[in-house]
Amino acid sequence: MFLLNLTAVEFLAIFTALSGIVVGLYLLNRSRKKQVVSTLRFWTAAQQSIATRQRRRIQQPLSLLLQLLSLLLLLLALAQLRFGSRENSSRDHVLLLDTSSWMAARSAQKTLLAEKTLLDDAKAKARAYLKALPSTDRVMLIRSRHSPVRHYVERDRDRCSVPSISRVPEPLPSICSRPSPSLTNPSQVSNPGEIVYIGTGRPDPATQLQKPCESCP
Amino acid sequence: MIDQALLEKLERLALHWNRSLPGSIGGRKTSRFPGPGQEFLDHRNFHHGDDLRSVNWRAYLRLDKLFLKMFQIEPRLPVRFLLDVSGSMSTGSPAKIEYAKRLTAALCYIGLVRLDAICIQPFRESLIESLLCGGGRHRFQPAANFLSSFQAEGRTSYLQVARQFASLYPQRGLLVVISDFLDDEDASRPLQYLAEFGHELLLLHIIAPEDRQPQWDGDMELVDSESGRHLELSLDQNARHAYTQAWDAHARRLQDLANRNGGKYVAVPTDTQIEEAIFGPLVQSGGLQ
Image (tube, rainbow over all chains, first blue to last red):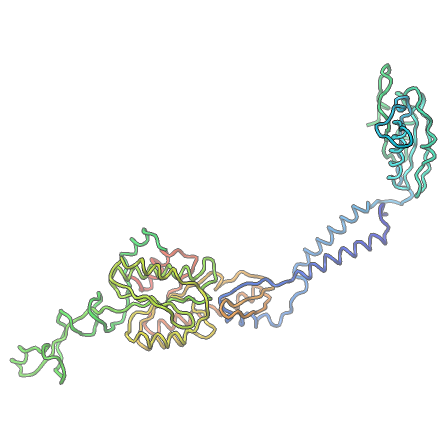
C-alpha cells in the first residue's frame, strides 16, 4: 500500500496540522451560552448539585472523531492511496500523434518568429500531457503513418520525453485508419491507462474508419 | 389589549372575597359588620355616645331600656391590583409583563362592570404611579391605556413595597398581587405583613415555562434580568431537576401563606390563554364567581 501523490511523511504532517486545527477549534468553541433569567436564587441549589463534577473537556467526542475520520479519508483520497507496491503500480498509456498532411496546416496561434503549424501545436500538447503523468507510468508514442511507428517513451521523473516528440518528422500523406492489431491488443498491456489522440481527426475520405478491435470498449 | 368577545364573556363574572370588611356603602356583598344600612340586622345595648336616631323607642316604651338598632350593609370594598413591572417580568416568550397586563386588564374590567372601586398599583423597587377607576365599563379604556404604558425594568423589593402599601392604603380590601414573586429576598414575609394588616390576598403567580422547567443544557452563563449578576454553570438533567425542586418549594410556600391567611393562590402559566386562565384556575379557586 502506498500513496501516489504524497509521501508518508508529507501525509502525516498535513494530517497532523489539519487535525490540530480541528481539535483546537473544537476546544475553543466552548463559549458559554448566555441566557437571561428572572432570578439566580434557585440556581444556587442547582450549582451545589454540580459543584463536585468537573467540566468535561470534550462533550461530544463522537462528533470530533467523525470530523477527524472524514478529514483522514479526504486526505487519503487526495493522496490517492494505492494497494500493492509502487513498482507494480504504473500504467501504460498510448499517445497517438497525428502526423498526416492535415497537420501541416497553419495554426491559429501566431508567434513572432515563424508561423506555427498544427503539428507544432500537437507536439506542445503531447509534451504537456507527458508532463502531467506520474513518473512511474509508461507511454508509447505512435506516430500515425501509413503504418504506425511506435516509440516507447522513457520518462525521467524530472524530464519529459522531449527528444522523442521533437524527432517526429513532418506530416505524411495520411493517417492510418487501420491501426496495427498488436498495437491495440489489450492483452499486451500490463496495466492499461489512457489512449490519447492528438491530431485533426480527419482521415482519408475514401477509407472507412473501423473499430480498432472487437474487444475494445 | 382584550378583544370584545372576551369582554362580553367577562361580564358574567364578579370578583369574590371571603372576608367581611368594613367599607362605605354601595357594594354588592353583605357584610357581617353592621352599619348605616336599610335592612334591619339586630339590636344591641345602647352605649354612651351612640346615635340617638338609631334607638328603638318602641322597645324603650315597653321595656324602659334603651336599645340600638343595627342595620345590614353592603360595603363597597376597594379592590387593589398590585402589578409587578420589575425586570424579572421581561423574561419568557411571551413576556410575563404582557401577560400580566392583559390579565390585570381583564380583572379590572370585571370589577368595573360590578361597580367595584378599582385601584391599579404597579410596583418595582417601590410603588409607582397608580390609577383609580370605577363606575362602570366605560372607564375601562383609560385603565387599559394606563396598563399599556408600562415596561418591565428595574429591581424588585417586596419588603419596601409592602411598607409603602400599608401606609398609603390604610383601608382594608381585596389585594390582588399579580407577579412572578421572584425576588432576591424572600417575598413571603412582606406578603404575610400585608395579610396581617387585614387585606385579603389573591396571589396570581405568573409563570413562564422556562421559569419552572428550563430546557437549557451544557455550559451556560446565566444573567439575572434585574441585578445583572452572572453565574456560570454546566447544566445537565440533575441540575435542572434540583432547580425545579427549589422552585416548587418556593411556590408551595406562597400557596401555604395564602391559605393560612384566608386568601387564595392561583398559578397562571403564560402558555395558557387569558380566557382559559380566567375561566379555569381563577374561577375554580374562588377568586372569581
